[in-house]
Length: 295
Length: 255
Image: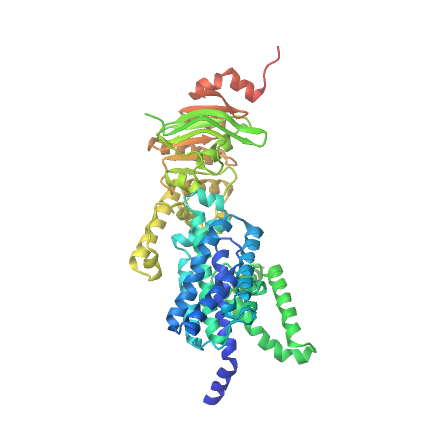
């Protein structure tokens, strides 16, 4: 029995690690969505965090703690000069500008010889453990959950619902939006730093715009009304391929295309039938049952 | 008493339309000041200019002698200017009391660290904020509806929650944009009583209102706008007799 569990752990260690990492990436998008801003620069912030941390351990032989700190603070610091101009944009224009930032970072890394260009960095020491990933995730979830119902949580909700009205109530909306962009960048950065030391390697193409879209899909599928939704969505969509791999012989499709099809269908179904995400499913079922009983 | 709000030669153009065209008037503390005029006269634009949602094209707005024209809305709010909206703009998913708590943003000073560490001081600060919100809802007669989501309140109740939310800022100047629109006469009378009471306490109230009786009974002074210009200014009784005002509302007699 003990060895069976050990085998299971060994088999799924990578998957479990990615559940936690993707949850952090999803929360980094949630941070800006919480105040109604669709910012998609998080693949770029993750790349900055991953490379900064990898350079500390790989090139400078610095301690892992310092690497994580650099991977968190550098993207957060970058978010300030990026956010000051682009947060004046709204809706899809903000999304485009921040996606552009991500691509600038990626192309910059491709052309930077010191970090091996498109090949990226390899043989990064494996210092990230599963408990560490879940510790960071736990702290992030706790802090975000504690914002709800606080002065700052109410301010974010007010900005999301009606920004001009929030401003007339004395809420400095620009400051809040910038703070959440910085928080999102820090979360994406620390997740990138952890990932680099989990998979031994980083490459620019791992941080393409598709990655930013993945993070958004995690958050939307899980739901963005509370911080549990993005974590749930990330877990669901990260575990899904494992299930699909078992299913693929039955339906006669390769696992790869099957995964993409399933992701697309799930996203569509959630947007159409569960606009508040998977996290709202229990509440919806309760409401439906209450209605049935009443009828 | 000297004026709290002074508006001088205020103008705002939208393209070629001069929505506000050189308006001047003053609002004193302890005074309900009516701002009336036909539809499209520029009343709501004046409120948007004073609260900072719209920047003036030219002219002066001073609060207690301080120039506030063109300041961002949250800075103006911090100086003690609160408003309600003609089209209600509550946060629909939040309860009535949480809407009012949002309005207390400027007056609350909690510690983020205390909140994260679940210190008793954080809980006490939040209880105080909620208590104040309930007290303000009591003033507008909605204490029993504190926990109801704003979207489930009646139209008249939502207007009163908006007034309570504005009072959450502890404002010196209150801008009310048609606070009794859509209310039945009993509700409207209760709001009129509240407005007079707020003025007696020393608030300055700038009131945009179509209910003529309410304006006549509650306002100490009235400014009449037509096509963005002030056509009359003074005590309500005098304004009501003014020929230009009658003409603006009813059209000019032929002859």
